[in-house]
Image (cartoon, rainbow, N blue to C red; front, side, top):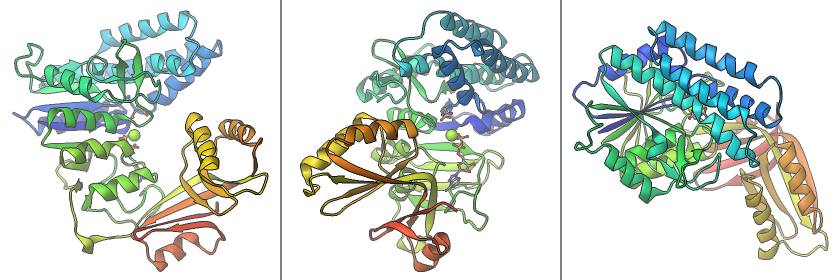
Amino acid sequence: MKVFKFGGASVKDSASVKNAGSILAMYPNEKLCVVISAMGKTTNLLEKVTEAWVKQDVTVLELLSGIEKFHQGVSEELGGAGKLQIKQIMNEIRQQLQSAPPSLYDAAYDLIVSKGELLSTAIVSDYLNKNGVANQLLDARKVVITNESFRNARINWKETTSRITAAFDDANPDQEALITITQGFIGSSVSGQPVTLGREGSDFSAAVFAFALDATQMVIWKDVAGVFNADPRYFSDVVKLEHISYRDAIELAYFGASVIHPKTIQPLQNKNIPLYVKPFNDPASAGTLINHFTDSKSQIPSFIVKPGQVLVSVSPKDFSFVAEDGLHTIFGLLSHMGIRINLMQNSAISFSFCIDDHPEKMKRLFTALSGDFTVKYNRGLELLTIRYYNKKIIDKLVDKRAVLLEQRSRLTVQLVVEEK
Ligand code: ADP
Ligand code: ASP
Ligand code: MG
């Protein structure tokens, strides 16, 4: 069994769906689990629908009809693929929008935003069935079971593994075709509430299926030739990495290389399942292989530039040390408010950390800290992370800017500088 993942860019229009079909046709007689994201920018648009619903804004139906027209257009260009299902899903959303949103914003979000993947998979599955690529559609909400942390749901591994295994069992009468299409990013809680796994979470969904199915390999089909040593959208002199270790992949993803969702690697590493990142416009090419790999010679410096950073410095008002209890308070607040630290450092009487610039969250955090601590912060910063660093690459990226904070380990250096 192989697990494939097609992201938003690989199913963004009718030509892309046809291309995905031709990739699947290259694997006849193979059992495939194909995990698909919402088409193009659908998730962003559904987020806007949710916002309008919660605010009871009149634009909500207009926004929705834009999404409907887009999917109908793709469907028409594919000979009416998924037409009936689009209608049905749209009716469900309209019905939902007529009732008052749940008081919890994140639950409202998951009710609406989870529909994007249902639309894309309905179209792709029907198109493929009508064009010689037989498949069955599996509703991920029936097998990917989570807690109720809406928008960031955590997998219940035991339940999910047992449901996925049963769904793919050869004895299951629904398993007629070798190919199963399912949704990335979505699942449901034990009590049946729809949930999402966090933005860009389809890579992780695919890894969950790969883990449960003991897949022989997983392939993520992308709009790039593989994993590069930096984002090729922003840097021209980049090199493709032929082969990297799980460890390097997880470090790069964790520090913000958006080519792979950071949670993807762990389930694959646990079962030693190789991950290939391959280009959907050149499917026969090698792409990048990620697995257990320890070749110290191939340590090409890789870097990630994270703009929109804020450096926060917190000191106890009474000039006491920032000891375990102070850190406990600070970390408790950060965790409770869902704020992730991208870099941290402490001295005797101050604790500094770098976070993404979310004005609302920062306001709440600073208010909560202001009782015991003096808070200072700098906005408009960039966080540079370089793995396998050397002086030349540091100088090039810093480009004569002042370094506000620096942290080095044996393999990775992180530097906070002002944005250009
Ligand atoms: P999808 O959601 O369609 O699966 P994404 O847009 O999430 O795809 O990921 C692909 C994008 O990741 C590329 O277009 C590229 O700009 C970006 N990217 C960021 N860092 C890297 C990197 N180190 N190597 C390759 N691509 C990268
Ligand atoms: N459709 C979701 C998103 O855009 C999940 C994904 O694409 O991975 O975030
Ligand atoms: Mg993505």
